[in-house]
Length: 308
Image (cartoon, rainbow, N blue to C red; front, top):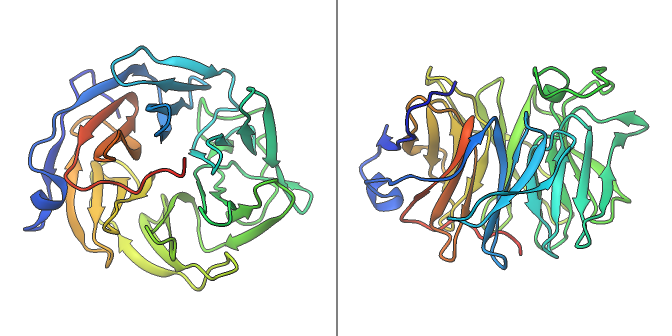
């Protein structure tokens, strides 16, 4: 779903305090136009720039606001979610390449995960890094085997489940975190990293998991179930510094309190929002990747800073 109309953002489905938390008017800056299917945004505080992907365009891009985007990698294994590790390196979900890889400082690529018990991964989708342990958590739904213009050469599904995995920083250890999902997609930690949130695009819900000291998680609990019928499914997921949870979903970007209730929706009429990240020096800018473009708006509450 993408129109040629300008991107506008309006607050609706709003609780009484939504304007205090989110804002009341939302100017839109187009950071990157002519993106076929934007995804994977992450802000680098040291370089003051955004990295993002175009899945269908099979490229990883980076851009400083106001400048022209530059291509970092093409082809990119139809890269999807991305995150910065504790050393500031991009760690990438190679969606149709069925890998998780890291781009080193010299531009070389290190593969961190490509199989589970000898069987190829499904299609790594979104990714986070735990700040203390450095372990990398990622979702592994089968969409990269199915989605037109996003698939690789091998379309066979080898795993019987759609897990959330975690892999050690050097790729030597790998574990299943949970297999609760039909189609796990976005994930993020709460600000104190004591809760892992994971959403499901097919069931249109978000689950929350208490993170144990060893990095495993307890039983999942329902955080929010979407019933809105506007186009779009739960996808990108981030937290602000107050513990509020933001999720791209039906009709735009939804903001939830830590109890799962809705603060408000940043509606993006005619434009499909795929993922989000916070950025800029004060972390109050919300970057939104879309089918068609990447845009930025400003919020009242800062997001959780990226690790590097």
